[in-house]
Image (cartoon, rainbow, N blue to C red; front, side, top):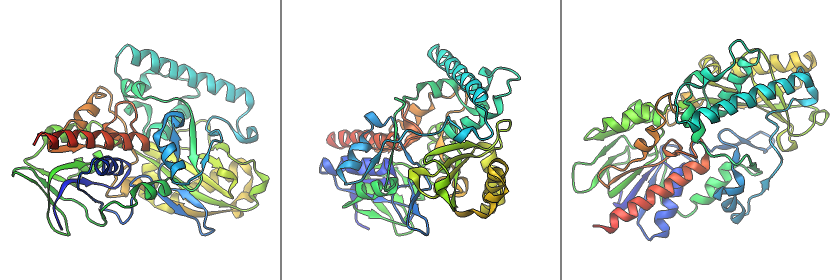
Length: 411
């Protein structure tokens, strides 16, 4: 393969953001991608009916200031501004109105304590801010797994507090994957080409791939933190400080299951159910997203890892049993599995999105720092205020590309 000014490793949102910025500056850039598609953890598949289903990220968070919204509209995609149903319960099924109000108070109290502790720059695990013995602690922990991919005992209060959120959340009707494909159009991308080694000893950086070696003046690395820690990509000379920072920013896990729903018109569109109120081992059920005959099921944290270890059938069995207990045994015949994710077992992800371990909120800055003005790092884990999001990943790629352009200008 021919040499380039800059090699971008990874064609997810970060890699595409970097490539777009580099191309706009007239830099010769090549993107290499381990998978056979663009998007990384933004992955839209299709149900047998042809309906798009989001196996990765689904929401445009902080949508009122999210540049991916403008890009989606520019490429002819459709933005849906329906409010997310996360904190409600469809028709109060299994969740009495008084209990819902009580839970919202408990959730608000937790967020207020997170804000107070974070603003004071005091870092600790978020579980220390729970009311001891509260009946809502299991559901608060489950909620954390959907937001952060981990339970509160693994969550840095300071890192969580630094996250910027306007509270506006929209969706792309055609799917995030359609947006990633539109952004990638026209770029030089080589698929099924995982990088295994970055050798930065010589005058040019050398990247080993199964399709041959590549050389470039600079490299932008967008590989997820757990892949770096597992040795999926090596550096020569080694970068122990970089790997240490990645280890302090592991990927939490949020898996999805899609169920087809017969007779869907019986249920209100874009409604929501918690499967259980007294256990962290529960699904969160988004019923009829976009009004489609589907149920989008979320599992997170340790429970998602347990289900992944048992296989896709375990997700389906648990979800259908839990929905039948809420809506009646007749539901068993009306639900059928379409697709499930297993992000922890994906060798090119090994999880869903990053969280800082308690006491290690500053690891994001360390991970993002360039090495010798030749190795640059991007990805949602590199972002102090926009981590765990596609727009954060995209912004990190644009930022890393800007640093690479400046460094190339000095030579």
